[in-house]
Image (cartoon, rainbow, N blue to C red; front, top):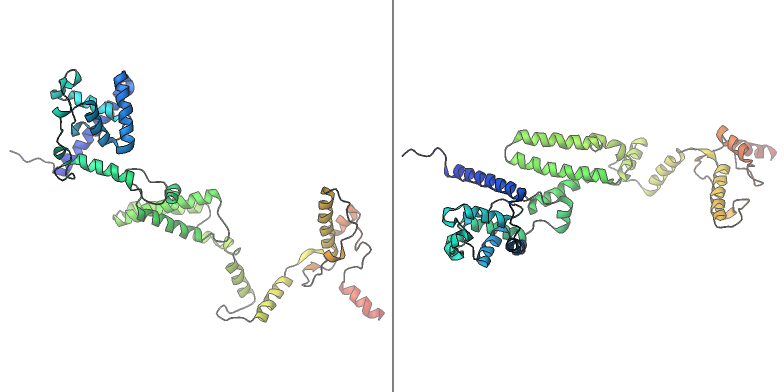
Length: 364
């Protein structure tokens, strides 16, 4: 006799494909009106749904066969999830020649596979049906990841669900991506993008482990494109980096020639900060700053039905100790004063200027 051109694994795969095709064909027939709408059929489906919710599809079919005295055959149980597995099981059973005729040829549960050692195997682990039941039980009892991880990442479906290790890798990769945005924060779109990148990074690592370099390269390109769309690549970081404390420190060290490997004294640090603050100039004068402060206070008082103040209280006045403000008003400030009818100093002593200092010396 000629040897089969297929090995055992290939034959099993072909058998699975035929079962899937049969399931799909029967599901289409059912959707066209072949479902059992009889009172008995609806009652059986209700019981099956209860069993399936607790025990899973495979054991639900077995228990329903016992409950309704119907022959049980493992080869008739649909392997893939379908809308009404119990109805499809009975349709398959009726196609078997030994169960042709009304009420499955007048046969009951004891006429089918009633021996559990033949159904589940001698040690309850050998048969395919037993393995299917084990998988369903494990899926109900053991859920990988924490509740938060499943909420953040999903489960990746039933075909290739995330393992506990996968969830840990997703969290770790996401933390690495987020570390580039410390001190700045992420909006919802950026957070979504980084989570998708973490998922693609996990898929890339799995492809690399499987030796599929081409697929891994595709995932890598997709990650870079996603990061580019949100300006979150490594080369996009510099504008954001300067907003961080270490970015400011680095800028000060470079500006004032400070050796980052040497510890500065408190006095030296204060001197650098003082020089840096003095380098920041504002176009407004001290008098203008007082006028702005007075306007803010009066807006609050008016909202509270209180009379506005004519002058800024002395305790709220401040001095320009670091020389950050302009000594003389510019054209914009002069125009604003003229438009609003403001008087510089408003009856108080004028802010000190270099010319007034010189006049005082001359008068002395």
